Image (cartoon, rainbow, N blue to C red):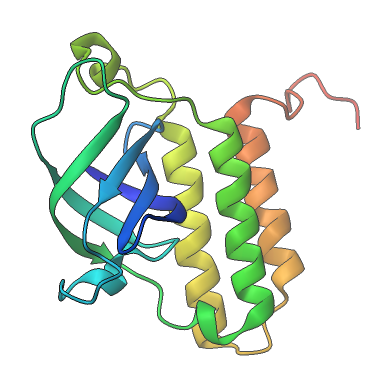
Length: 169
């Protein structure tokens, strides 16, 4: 599976529980074992806002938490952590999408093929990439403008914006 890390929480001594937003716009919870112990070379890939490719281990059909056997970084931001306001905006974007996305059941074939929510992934990936690009190009980038752009795209995807052809204003 491939997805963007929405949420990351420590679990026991050196494990991490992660919520991934999949390409179909739904989220899954994945357990990464041994990440915090320093034994894995790609432990830094599990940071929030990064996009990962994850190979899952065998899981029971009744379990809602999947096990990551292997993972690699597809794309990760480099400059957002070094600018606090940009990092706060990233965390805000991830939190909003985390609240809107629904849980995915990877064992259900019909659920996996459903592409109804994939706009959430597109909106979030464009927002993270655009925020990173703006911070690299201009270190004094207006973060509020990026946040407004994120909300405009999200409202358009969700269908909250008015119909342009019948709107008087």
